[in-house]
Amino acid sequence: MIATLARLWHTVRPIRFRLFLGLLSALVASLVALLIPQVLEMVVNRLDVSPTAAAVWTGAAIALGLGLVEAALIYLRRTFAVAPSTSVEKGIRVDFYRKVQHMPVAFHDAWGSGQLLSRMMSDISLIRRWIAFGMIMVVTNAVTIAVGLVLLFRSSVLLALIFLVAAIPVTIIAYGFNRRYATLSRLSQDQNGDLATTIEQSVQGIRVLKAFGRGPTALEGFTEQADELRRTEVRKATSMARFDMFMFMLPELALGTALLVGLFQTAEGNMNTGQLASYFATATLVIGPVRQLGNLLGQAVNTMTALDRHYEVMDEENTITSPEAPTALTPGAARGEIRLTGAHFRFADAPAHVGDVIDGVDLHVRPGETMALVGVTGSGKSTLLQLIPRLYDTTQGRITIDGIDVRDMSLTDLRTLTAVAFEDATLFSDSVRSNVLIGADQSLSPEEAEALLQLALETADAGFAHDLPLGVDTRIGEEGMSLSGGQRQRLALARAIAAQPAVLLLDDPLSALDTKTEERVTERLRSVLSGTTTLIVAHRTSTVALADRVALIDGGRITAVGTHQELMASSSRYRYVIANQAEEARRDRDIETLTGELELSAIRKAGEEVR
Ligand SMILES: Nc1ncnc2c1ncn2[C@@H]1O[C@H](COP(=O)(O)OP(=O)(O)OP(=O)(O)O)[C@@H](O)[C@H]1O
Image (tube, rainbow, N blue to C red; front, side, top):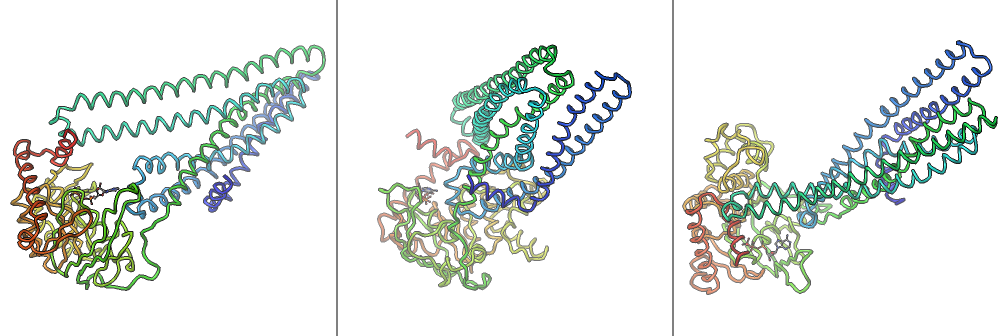
């Protein structure tokens, strides 16, 4: 807790002085407010002695003046604290985003996107509200209550004790309520997030749901989730209603009792009317901070939790970073010779009894060569590809490009040398042009960039982009025009080509294309990118046959390397894998003919589940 506070103190360093001014304004404002009842007491007592209009006017003018000063100070408090705290909030948010961006893929495997989103949005907002408001108000309210109590005791010890009897449970109830309410709020936020995810999934997978007649089941699931959220909202409202009841009932009861006792006391001459008036004015002023203090203490605990959650992400160690003294290289001059030596890899969450996913791979890919990676599903093809640009790091062994260990290169150089296209083509909500040129050399002139865009689109057989409503300036992605799976894949491939890498890593990027288009694209890739070393995960025999050589991967090991013809002749395992893939491709074609643009991979997955 102390360490967390110390870190927060460090974070607010640039605005500490303004926060101090905010605190000062708030303190003076509340002391000024507490002066008003004292003026009231004076006026009432003066009126008892000499009831003149002048006394009334003077008292009213002083109270009005004090009220104006208080209002001005409250304005100052907000000015001093709110604007700078939003800049601190922005800073924290940007740091968080930077951190998440820099973290390796393994971090994102481990952390759900919902978790990161809620830490990025809700937790950071909570921290900002505490910096701008909570921190200042907790001190101000504590001082107001302390001074207020002294004034109440000065008016009447007995009435002050009645006030205290109500104030203590109010603070305790408010504190407890805030803690419980925060838990419920977080639950409701999580459930809202889950509901949003369900809607997103059903909208994205609407065709699969319809094709399999799973709409009613999806609706049932959704209704159950919506009902859970409703129950949480009802619990929140009930809890709030109970809290409000106590918050108003206890102080009102105390003030009612105090009024009764106060009137007797005044009648018996134990206190004067001025004191009684000042007691009530002070008590009304102090009850607000009493109610708020419990809330603020609860908020403080919630903010500590939010800070801990925030620092938990910020403290995650980034294991994939550039070395301190990277080997100098010129990505443009690279030959693209890849060598894996005794490469091992296992996922951090893999159970102990399971062997390494990549289990001692030795592989040599010659400069400019196109090598196909072939293996049954789950044999480690995608994982192997991802080790080269260090999306994951080998747990043993080494990978070199042109003789330089990838760990000795700066990440920027390595990621310029390599480009990846995944089967699952992710496009951003932006124009086709921006999507394709995302990894292109930023120093190109507009004409060069345009020529590169054309070449990439042509090579990837993505000429359809010119026929979109605004051509290559058409907005695509989630908020833009929707494209078919095959179109998305071709743009993702064009993006990898436009990066002009020395090493092109293609993870089954043509799976959604028909066989003819795939063959055409593979041919073009070979002629346009003759100097580029290409490692391609392929399922179709046609693509495999076009590669210079093929590597067969089995259980995380390379078991055979050679041309397609050589392996067909020498390896029975290779013949088995290829025959299997041909069968799969035939089934895909049949389904495609039957259902048009259906999501093939989803259908396959659903089919596997049924089996
Ligand atoms: N992020 C991950 N965390 C844990 N295990 C994973 C992760 N990604 C893949 N695996 C596991 O690693 C193994 C190899 O997966 P990989 O995706 O490399 O296979 P693949 O040969 O590319 O399969 P496919 O042809 O089906 O794409 C599989 O058993 C898979 O379940």
